[in-house]
Length: 127
Image 1 (cartoon, one colour):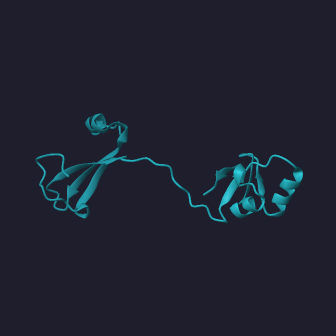
Image 2: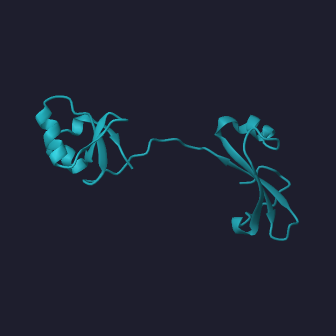
Image 3: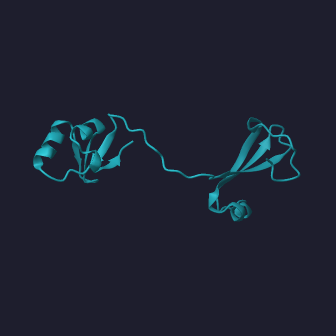
């Protein structure tokens, strides 16, 4: 859908339009569009058609925000808070868990966390 009546009614294939400039708010050239779209505006792009006879102004907007649902497998590394008997930490170390002093968590595979019944203590999932 075109916003300006001066633009043709047929849609333009994007591959025929070359990006010549990309601006981010609040750079000059984005002020009017920032007022219109607010924080949803990511950037403004100026494009030329393949014959360089027309200039098109396009915007990139945020239209939805949702949390990322990570797919956790048995080999996914997780950070676990182990509070309790030293024997539990020793068992985790025998199964390959490593202490991360910066995060103050034990890094281990999800398989290990499940084997030790520690899934309720997972504080971090690493990519």
